[in-house]
Length: 54
Image (cartoon, rainbow, N blue to C red):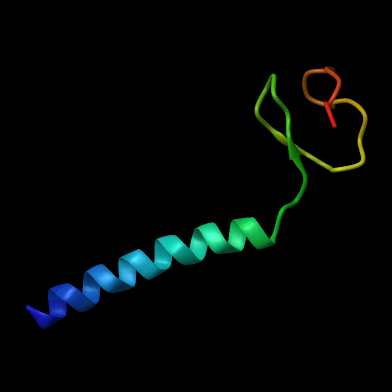
């Protein structure tokens, strides 16, 4: 029983850690057309050639 509780707690902490890491390390903006991450200071998406809204 204790092993199961510890295992579930480790999985919950891993998921929370992944979301916290993504929140802290934000590599840029998300393109609204092709849903790819592009750098912050780029005017248009290099993948689908649409403008990035600020």
